Length: 249
Image (tube, rainbow, N blue to C red; front, side, top):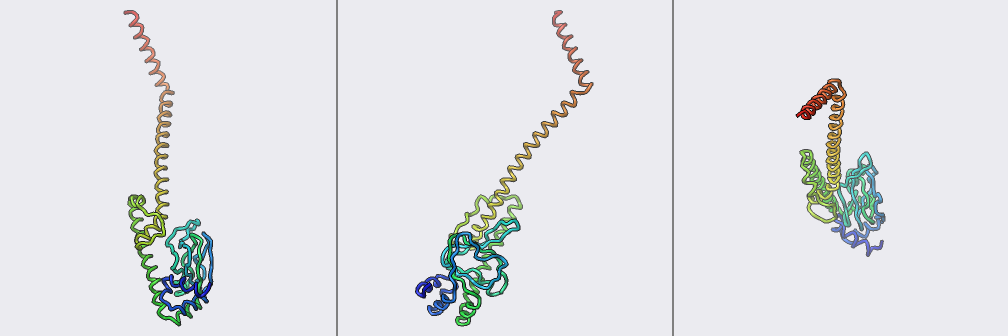
């Protein structure tokens, strides 16, 4: 990527847009360009965190993976945003898996190169802190919203599911974005509720069938006794007597 191309690309980044052109050029020379197809994994939870990525084109979803392989989208990032910068600060393994949700292109900046730029421009640290703070604020909002919705569902209130937002890339408040992301999870809750309602109907139908079978069995048990046979015979004789009396008249 040429110097003329890299400068406007980096200026779109929330993290690097305040840097002068000569620093951006140096940054571009130190960065490696990567292209990813849709559904390609950029990083996995637990990987060594030795670089950050600036998104040039496309979208990525940050997901938490369940033990059964299922995934829950906990955030999404698009052009101009950076991914993986937290690992450069605490040098801990990656905290989440990041997957391309469309064809995408990123610039990868290794840890050593980033610290070289940071030595030249200490004010970059402030932008990095702002970026991390923004992520933390969103995480807090996300957790609060998840707790609020979970409490309503545990109380039997499913109304929020009908009003949940469809996951989209439209910008909005942290609360809107959290609701959009959580809608994917609560769609699963909706499916569980639908299966629960269907199961209740099946149980009710089965209960009716069991009651009917029990009544039939009880009737058969009663009608098979000698006592019932005697009653039946007495009733037959009584009807015959009445019929004879009717003929005599």
